Image (cartoon, rainbow, N blue to C red; front, side, top):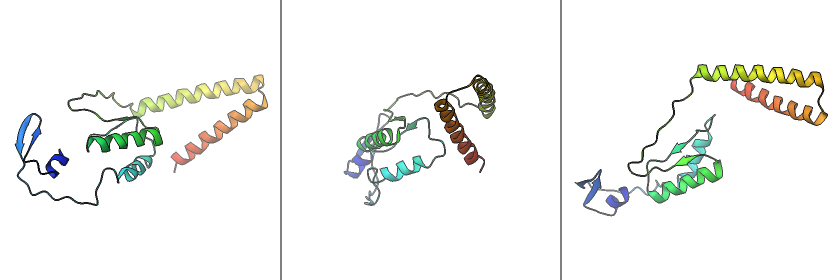
Length: 146
């Protein structure tokens, strides 16, 4: 609709109603959804935990599709560009208590399995792989504690 107004259209359709455009429209050259894609992608990458899904709900269709493609291909994100009247049901987020219970359960399970593996003996390759994984986990925990 922004493009229609910018192009001088005297009326636009909003939710099925014909609305007269009674405004003096100015175009600011420095803002562009195409040019700002890199900035938006950088902003999304700055999140400590990447979003599970991104909904692009504003912008011209071509620019939204291009940004969605960029976020999908270069950043591996799930991106939806909804169409008019599309309904999306979002599941409720896990509560912190549920996540904490899951962490404790997983910790106990891993600790028991590691003790069993060490008691029965494991080959050096598997031992090294486990050590690397535990080192990575320790790094994540240290980062979270800062």
